[in-house]
Length: 455
Ligand code: HEM
Image (cartoon, rainbow, N blue to C red; front, side):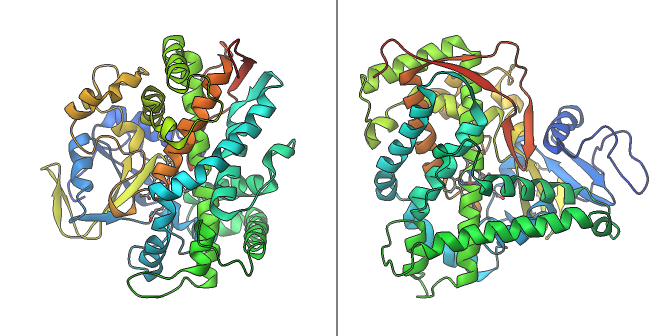
């Protein structure tokens, strides 16, 4: 943006705006700046300028697909060794993006979702078996087991045996280290950075090799199978409808790793935040629980349609994703010279980062945006709000392909947990948000016990 933008006050020559910020909490640091500096501001790190936008009017402009498109930021570029030209990390102009998007779209249709439902239910039952033992549970760890298992089995017919292990599958540990590495690389000084990080780079190489070996195992398990009922079947056995082209082997590997990572971390965080807010808000918990009791009437095998009927539970999830959108930013690049918010000129090629948690606290959300209030998503209040102020799944053509998958899975799981357990949070716990490209509540535990009416 050509106009001088507000920036944090203590800027140091060459280094930039790094005082008082931590490589572990870039999003929460930016949220603090957002509250102080207004709807658009700039941060500089080692000479690299990043423009942050969170004002509702400006984000509406950036959401205009005629003038803006997804931009691959340095942080996403650092994930290319992991995801290559997979859907999430692909540049708009790479032919494999559209090819894969067309080939994989059927995996997210309503019919596909209905077909995944029994598997999602079976995996939730495995979680219930573990929680039936009662006592204190580590929420984020268990949600990660559940969501990894769900994308593995529904998308690829592959089980990580998550609930048969005391510790998460090594895939998770390697993935977490790789994401942490990519996040750290954003803040490393140019030129000398790679030399300072030689040991970490070697470790990262080993993690990437391990992750790729898991993917090869997933593909190997399906050799000779010509079914097309899930993501892997579509990748291996179908072609792009408009060109007849198939995905190549390297791209298939990139897509598998993309879906295994993108398809579980974010949903796991969303479920964990929803459970945190349920435990913190007894009125909300009671209302959600009574909805499940009424709609499901004690049925331990809710159908696909019955999950969609949990309107209040869904609002709890929407509200948790408002306060903590677990993929907290996306970037938009100008396709033409243009003006944003009637004020800020942007040249073709310039880009800005939409800081979603700050957008979700914009004044359009009312006087008390920090309050957890699922009724914000009641139909009349949804209608009264301007468009483009709620973006937990990104925007436009490059928005989240897994949105319906995530929402169905998470609503089902919350419904099952609410139906079966009394959930009590530790009253001394203070929310600590962990950032690893995605967000989750760190160290949050629940005390679970079977409800009197549990089936
Ligand atoms: C893209 C959020 C669940 C797969 C995105 C983007 C966001 C997002 C914000 C856009 C990123 C950008 O513009 O740079 C979320 C949230 C989820 C979730 C908050 C859960 C609550 C899932 C699931 C899957 C998935 C379950 C797969 C089953 C993807 C993929 C993309 C994507 C492949 C890239 C799409 C493209 O560019 O074509 N997600 N996601 N996500 N998501 Fe999700």
